[in-house]
Image (cartoon, rainbow, N blue to C red; front, side, top):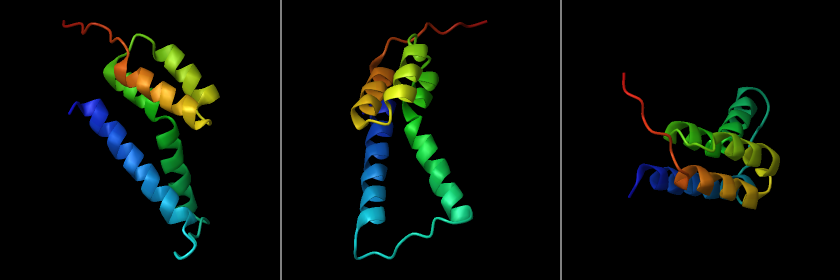
Length: 98
């Protein structure tokens, strides 16, 4: 399995676990004040911008378009998935060796 596909699968699994943990009525409520709230917010921001991180790591040619879709449509799950798929499968720039 390719590295990008592994990353996407791990991110999806993490998201599913987080949603279950935060919404399950039988589990205690998460205290989101102080450092726990900050870490939760930081994790959410990192997950939100995952398509941009993947595109940067892969050195995609369309990084600008991916970032625009991620920022403006990423809040919709479909927009986020489109940006992530584009980042994972987009054409990359040639590596320059000195």
